[in-house]
Image (cartoon, rainbow, N blue to C red):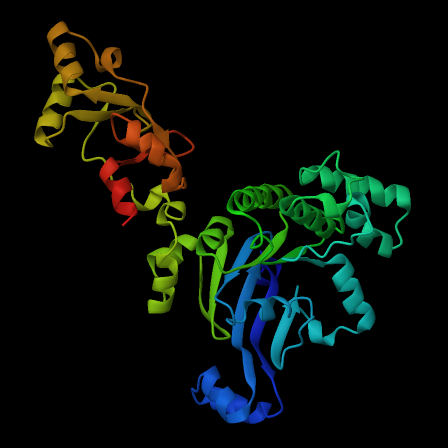
Length: 394
């Protein structure tokens, strides 16, 4: 697959300056000045400077930063609500700046939708009327647009609320209406500018889960703006951190947490719950000893003694996990002339390599033995001990 097909939105050397003396401001920035120095000398505000981003198709791309970092400015360049001072924004290879009015209108109606923090609902319309509005503007018949709107309303969990006044809905429900309205147009890209920041923590968590479920089902490209690191790491397939109008780092949540680009990113990511971004793959260890199901209890005892262990994992000839053998069971088997297959404990807690540490913490706390890490074929790839889970949190 070509890079163009993988990348739906491309930001190339985009800068956005506000003020009269942009040329002098640009020279100062190129010479290494910061945005405060530029503003003091020229009166020009540097909202964005030399921003480069590649937004992958069908993924959630999160842009995070503090107030004034440029995150909202750059997302408004994606639908040309903001026009860059320099640089290009490409949608599927086409420069947005080269679109005429008709093409831009078509792009905004059919390719890209936006969900705002303030919901932006029309108080004189009910839920159905708000969700169907974009389809009405397109000229779709009432029956068709209402049928389509009802499907999306059901998807966001508001079935039965179609004729409720939006003014009587809770904040979380109003935001669901906003998401449904954006999805009703079936856009390829959904822009979300801090959509959950006004919600209380419990509702916010529910909305994050709903968004993940919807995105995984529809495979839409989502560009999500937030200032909350936990939210960024929970939602993002990729995360970009911005500071003072510049992109500091772009990486997966796990990669960013493990390898911050600088002290600013390190401090920023330090506030996040690492268990929610670290996968089992990065904390599992290779078992120091294995025995095959066909081998003797005497050999198993020898392996455990050699490695100072009281248990050993049992695998078949394809290295698929069978269970765990304790030293007590191995000694009993040798004494009574039993095979390992007759005493192996098959009820072993297992997990996948891509599971999050946060998801296995309750299991690890209760499990009498290390958790076995297996692949989709059941092959043993490693083990996770209580110690390795705890070390992932440090």
